[in-house]
Image (cartoon, rainbow, N blue to C red; front, side, top):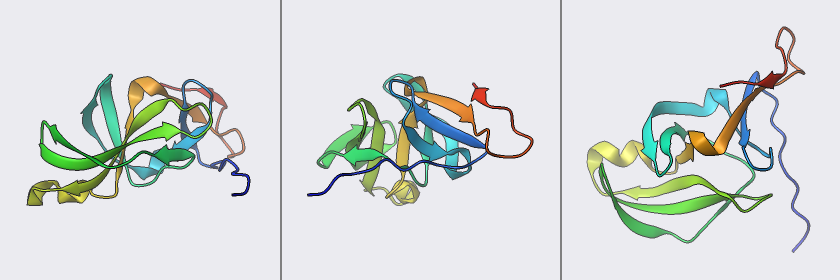
Length: 123
């Protein structure tokens, strides 16, 4: 197996790992901010990068039974959220193949390469 390189995102707002600052997702990839994780508020994303997916497990969650897999930061091995593989209830199937990132484990930064944007940490 060859070396794996981190993906660097270029967007006005980027979410990065709080622990090691590895890029994880773009602000534009947020589908919903109305989620809760183990550490509080969480976001549903359509796409994430620089994560490793664990083995799928079945979990009973507040919205029903799901098959999920924890996702860890590729750089520092911190669990940053989970991926939905399967939702058993029809109204929850929109989550399939989407990702939850927990706000407490993220930092939002502004990309200084975009004109008009000021670099630095956001909220």
